[in-house]
Amino acid sequence: MAVLADFWNGDGATGTRRFSSPGGRWPGGLSEWSPFFDKSEKLFHLRPAPVEPNFSPLLDHMTSRGLEVRPLNLAYHQKKDCEYCQSSICQKFCRVDGWNGPLEKIVASGKVIESGQVALLTKTEALELVHLNGTVRELRCLKRRGEGQGEPVSIRGQRFVLAAGALRTPSLLQNAKSLGTTSGFSELKAIGHYLMRHFVDLYTLSLPNWNQLSFDEKKHLARVKSWGTGTILGEARERLGIFQSFGALPRQEYIWKEFQEQFSGVQWIPGLRQVFAKVTPKIFRYPVGASIVEDEPQEANFVRGGRAPALELQYSISPDGQKKISQMRAKLKKTLGKSIVRFIPEAHNNRRLAHACGTCRMGKDILTSVTDEFGKVHHSENLWIADASVFPSSTDKNPSMTISAHALRMAHRMGHHRG
Image (tube, rainbow, N blue to C red; front, side, top):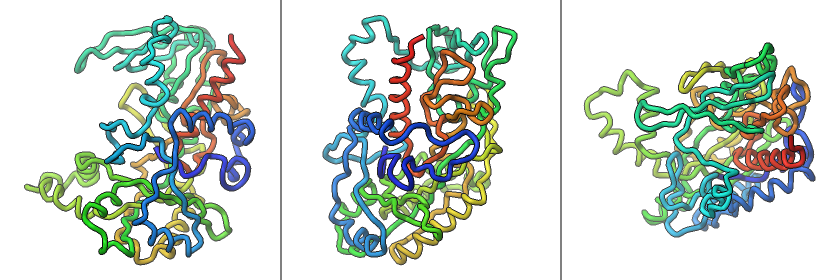
């Protein structure tokens, strides 16, 4: 998890300057959201990344070209020999996630579990919401016992909170079973629509002092998350997005799997995997920077589907999105110049839905939104959504802190409106 700055920094009070169309703006204002961001930062131990002196020549160059560079805020416990791992479970528990941050202490204490008010189910798949006129009565699940085996589980309660992600949460609503004469959630036309993502490109970078560094120093810089800038402006002086150190690339087996999917016709060449294993570390021996450009909400972009893994997706980049991607690439090429060793264009790759959001967006208009301004589903008295599907805009930041702040804000609202 890495955050360059909190969600509210940037253009305008809420950073959602372009979102004035269907569904309304982000609800509330800085004074309302700030306490929940502050609490999120404490829960996830957010702190500035350590300063890496060997990055100074590159960062000084970026600063001289008008970019304000500063340390990334990371959710982590600073430990010796941190691997800055991605796309894998952290083996050293440096990285703080939802489990080893907010939940671990609660579960470890045993008090909440012993009270009988909370039960923790693992290896359990949510299958179907059952409701009566929009009021959820039951969540039907499957408790996994082994490969291909499962035991039906029924969860009942007064209130339900969905946090299955922007791709799965809408499918639970779309496929909900009604016990009454009304269809309930199917009347909410925005469910699954306005699918958004982040446009991400990667750049391998060589530092001016690269040849003077030792092997261990180079290896460290190639994996560390350290710096970022959010002051990249377009032709009209609008914010294009952010550029930050990416950190360690995913494990090689993950990259190989991606390679197989993209180039299925060549994967059976004898010895290809062995060659791939030798070449990949050489290609990515440099530090990697990632540019992140904000997406635009479009009703025609949607997700729908039944049980995992079946999903139907329709997604295309808006003309404005295309323009911003091109401007970001041109700006970074001009700014970084010879520091770019290799450009890896991924922003136009619609197979990569980085940070998917928006499919159950917040808003006041039930024709263009799914929940109210606090995440409670329209036409329901006891169903709430706590994930990125409620985002009315994608923002140009890693969404983790915004998801957490929304969940805390939502919980605060639920506590004041018991029913």
